[in-house]
Picture: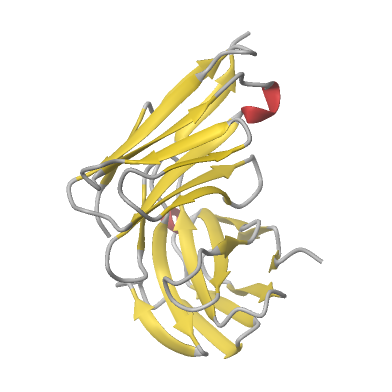
Length: 113
Length: 110
């Protein structure tokens, strides 16, 4: 199995839908991250969890709701999104915050219609 | 995060060429990282730099941590077709947060 696995790989949703993105890491890491990647723009850090506690919430709209039930799993719950939320959403994990480098998943390509 | 300026924004390579890209910051970093992202994939870490002046290689890739701690460059020697992709720099100051550049898109010259 790959280190960080994200599902689904692609998602198309309407603005009134509710969906969830899932991330699972098999590396024994204790920190997990959600990033948003839009075309031609730097990766934007959205949320950070360390030991299942949220330590960062980077002014992200409330239509994005993260959940970290254990150190191996991270979810991003989506509801009433806007077309400008269409992007690649990347999950990453690391052993500790800032002590070792993060491994990224393959991302979920989200399209909001 | 901090604003990183990565250049060039895009480049064309011909097989066998050496290519170079760089990243600058307005503030000092303690760590510089270089990632590569292939289409439909997540970024993969290529090289990590932790000390000013450090020069590190990974195969045909070489990266340096600038002496001022505000810049870094990545060289690819003798490029091959599989070098195409998007290369990102990232920097970290005192905390855990990474600031990313906007990427350099490398494509093969026809």
